[in-house]
Image 1 (tube, rainbow, N blue to C red):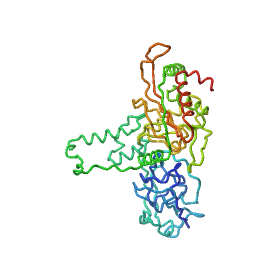
Image 2: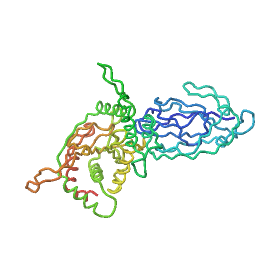
Image 3: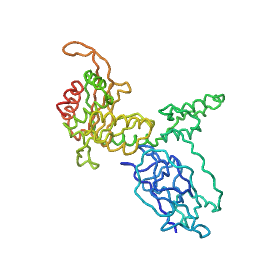
Image 4: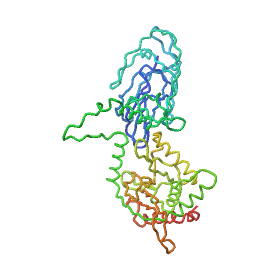
Length: 447
């Protein structure tokens, strides 16, 4: 007889307590394989597909689309065979091959991927044997076990979309993805393609009549905090509440650093970005000032000194500003730092970052100069103890070699947790970084 297994929402990342159901990928009565994605959820970190470790017949689903499910709460129940094929309604053994044996294994990684496979197979839920109703489950009546004529599987329509957010936007706006020509690499459909299609619909002949109803007089619209915005709000509020942060800053002549970059990129090999050079400077500076690669314990009784530099950096993605993490940045060459920064930046733009790529940082590099601003006093990325900010690099009059000259100047700001160090340590870190920006040759002494 089949055994009903309950699959609960696993921990999808550090500090996450729940996830919102974006889209179900399986139906009740459907036969699934081991590690097949069953639901697409949105966490505070990313949109991911969750695979089920059981193979068998889906007997129940929990939660509607848009509903939040807590970590550890049931997701689906699956009827799996317990030593042979289960008996059908007539007593004959005729269950699908997916039920021939119970298979259980650890979950695979939670990357954002497209579901693979052709047509779904469904069997009558009655084939799974009687099971007690579970409160909160979305149950569907058993399908009749009548034989059906074989039907040739339809050829799958391959839609070049990577981002689940793009698929969701298209679904919500009623846009047919198969009718779109993608503007991304190899015809990849991007969010902007869906937005153009939506705009084209609005600009039709009935656009004037399709204006949304105005907000009643005296009432301002309320936008709910959900998903990423809610997580960001909670984290920044906690950081501002718990961390006594201070900020210092300095103007820096970055002319020599930009000249070095041009030299490096004039030779064969991967291109080196300014961000990669700044990341290299940060890892060297943190080796000299390890107090700043740390975090205060939850109860505030101690300071954890991190041996590895997991370098977070601010990147603009489809879901807003995110902070991907370069693992073991101190062990990577400048070229390797550049390659990983580039890979994570592209993943942020595509909305395909995984929870593992968005958690575990020990220090953050924030290049807010890309927004055309010079300075900032950011809130620390809790529980990290420090963040280096970099403003735009712009030509300015500067005294160089005792004479007035036009130089490429930027402003560096450094925000730190005053519990882990005093101003002398923070000032020493910032001054060392500034000196390396002005005289990149200093890095050779440290490597």
